[in-house]
Length: 343
Image (cartoon, rainbow, N blue to C red):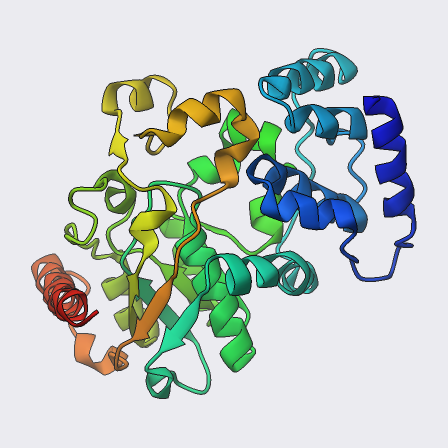
């Protein structure tokens, strides 16, 4: 039965010849509304535009959809690859693929599932470069960042690149879930000083979480309490004279509600965070739901631009950078508190 189902799916994919955009089939719409299917949708889209001989096949996709089937799919793929991990292909940022992924996959998710919307759009500048600094929560796949990047691209036509933890690029779990270099090809920038600085030197528009990984680690109870801001973005803003665009996100806590971080287990398996909630029992049966999140309404409140000239100081004065970072943190915290009272 699975083989016949897989053959039907393969035939539907062959209707999209190389060079054409990705066209949603009935199966893709099913994957969009069935939580274990999101991982299938991401990989199917990649395989339409890229050669991926080490990727998941149709039998394994079918196994994703049944309780516990992901473990069999993982075993099947491991055996098929000769007891090795998927090969890490060289992949550079591809703005065309980012646009295709945004229009063909991310767009429906943002519009109809996360219901993302920009508020106070009049504060958006017409052009970059920019450092877009946003509060970060959710304890899940970084949907708050991806949604904001898509909305900014829609509003201004910008090519936006998120800064992400290195773990999201190279952790073994990520390499097995998604195609190797998937994050880089979509524009992800490693949250390391050399990569961050190189992106700034190229006058890019970057999404940045000043709280760092401390943001998702807050968990449900402290979801709107900002953690101490890093100073890197302040120093680089001054060095390259790039303004900072603060953004407040409301609603990201419902991406994975009632979650707490299992710190000891998180360190053992070397993940940036490991949320535990009632949803985790479902995740054990359907591990492909690792990139899924609960339906919510993500609202982004654009704050007035912080010109780079405000941060004109000597790079040696780290205490000044720290003070300026925390001043911005307090400003955003006050805005978050105000919005929570009004909503």
